[in-house]
Length: 296
Image 1 (tube, rainbow, N blue to C red):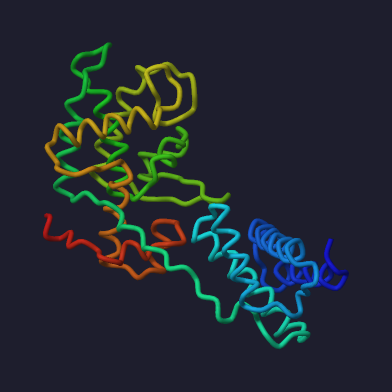
Image 2 (image 1 turned 90 degrees about the horizontal axis):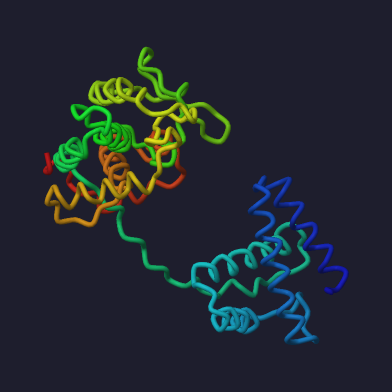
């Protein structure tokens, strides 16, 4: 398909990414795919070309080809970045070239995403008050079981910064009210978070009525059928509560987690916040951080 030397260099570049750069297999696979796709285009559209004498206009032709195919600008930037890395490898590591044809190629400007929507502490309490007034239990009209369950989930998101999917994946053994701990499993490693006093009260209430649910699964938060509580059900309840509470905002459950992250960003560095939220990207919580303290 390609000249033997280019085939060897692509193979060696892949080895370099694996053994020296220590990239994960997904990133290596993507880089290898992008390099092959680029040279497929070059040798298909101009058989006389060689990887050794490519110019800026060859890169620009490939970019235009990608645009016509409907490839997004962000993805095109990744393609340019991968090609640039490959030629830097040929120049710096292999020392067989002296010119990088991507050196004067600019990346597309990508508009920064809007800041994550947040909900203030007072607004959280408004929503929780509405959730507490949800339909009564069909078994005992004195128990607001849907409200208790949704309150506990909302507080886990707003006061512990947990994701909805992680909360709904909790098993019975993951929540210990005796030790005041919640165990989460991230990438094969256990992480423990403390249960606050407010959340403790909600979890005690929830556990006191959870025996009404059939024991059809080992999930901590169960539906009336005893199976895993459905995320869409909670999302619907949350949306209704936002409307009833009169908040003039378009909010989703993730707004609860975002608010926790915003508050934590006021008091912690980026590296500390990454550990708290267990996520790699946190700059969005420092850019245009709303003055949450004025909402109190």
